[in-house]
Amino acid sequence: MPDHVTMREHKHMRRFGEKIMAPELWHLNRRSVSAAVAIGVFFAFIPMPGQMLVAGLLAIWLRVNLPIAVMCVWITNPLTMAPIYFFTYKVGAILLDVPLRTHEFAFSLEWLWQEIGFVWQPLLLGSVICGALAALAGVIIVRLIWRLVVINSWLKRYQRQNSVKRKDK
Image 1 (cartoon, one colour):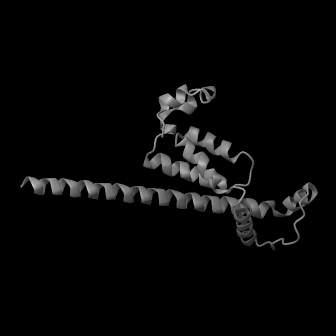
Image 2 (tube, rainbow, N blue to C red):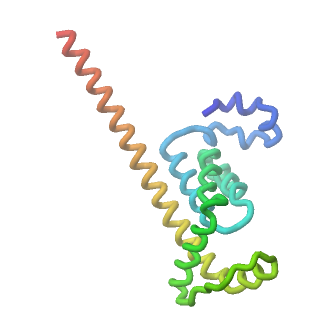
Image 3 (cartoon, rainbow, N blue to C red):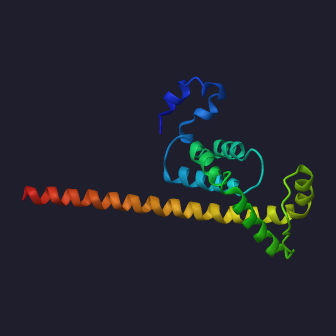
């Protein structure tokens, strides 16, 4: 990660002011990264415009890693968006005990507004539940991987120290 002094002096970053330059928004530590992953993954599952902006603002407010929070939103991208939101809709429909709407797709604004009226509740419920579960899984996975990396580096350091001690004897 670039240091915050370099970021502060960058011509495009200066326009956002001092809050975005806080060093804790750019540091990589277990708490900051895991919370940023949780924020980004949660908002990736919420079907709304401005997901990256909301994730970024929440990352700034909570003082967690800003770039990771924004990047994790891209779990839903043009290739993954339809399957993810269809899955979350199915989860919501099952939980609300409503039948799945399955009929032909017609690419028009009128069709979209008509369908949104029927699917918004199961889609929103499924999105919040799946987003929360995925965010929790993200935190657990990041913390587990972080711990494994730290343990591995401790073991390597211990082995290096023991090999140096053996050579000295």
